[in-house]
Length: 247
Image (cartoon, rainbow, N blue to C red; front, top):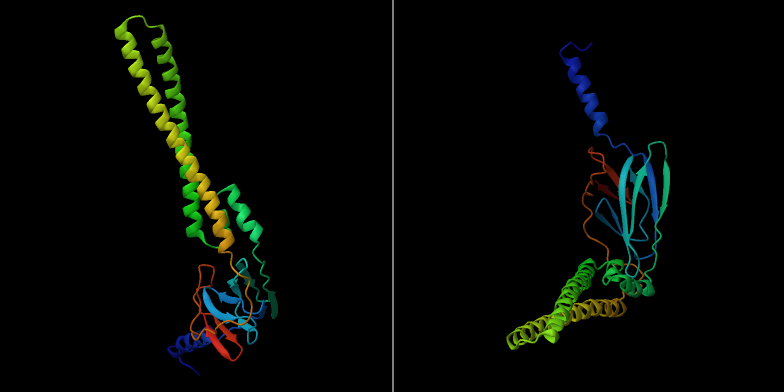
C-alpha cells in the first residue's frame, strides 16, 4: 500500500502519462486537384493527391491550397471530438481573364489584386487615385482663376485711364497664364489616371497566369507544423501516411 508521501507522486505520474499520450480524434481525408499545394496551419504538406489521410486531434485548422491559374482556397476547419472520420474536398476556382482585365475599368489595379499581385495592384491604385485627385484640385483652381480672369477682362474693357488699362491688362494676362497652368496640370492628372487604367489592363492580359496542373515538387521538410492563433496550445500530432507530423 503506497504511503501518504508516494500517493501524490503516483497521481502526478499518472496524469503526466495521460496528458502526454497522443489523443487522436479524427481521421481527415483531404482531396483536391492534382498538383495543387496544401498547407495546414502554415506548414507545407506537399501536393495533391496526398499519400493518405491525416490523423488529427480535435481543434481548429487553417487549410490553404494554391494552384497556378486558380483562386487560392482558404478554409478554417473545425475537427470535432465526436467525429471519427471527416472528408474535405478542396475545390479551386479557375481565374477569369475577362474578370482580370475588366476589373481595372472600375479602378486600376483591381485586376492585379484579383490575380494575387497586390504590389502591382497598389501601384496602379495609387497612380489612378493620385492622378484623379490632382486633376480634381487643378480643375477647382482653374475654375476660380477663370472667374478672376473674366472679371479682370471686364475691368480692362471698361477702363478709360491708361494706367488702369495697363494694370488690368497685366493682371488679366497673369490670371490667364495661371489658368492655363492649372488646365495643363488637370490634363496631366487625367492622363496619368487614364494611363494607369490602360497599363493595368495590358498587364492583366499579358501576365495572366496559365492554368497549370500535375504533380509539383515534393517538399523535403516534414517537421513540426506551426500552430496558428486558432490552435489549441497543447501539442497536437498528425499522421500523414507513414510519416508522422507533429504540430
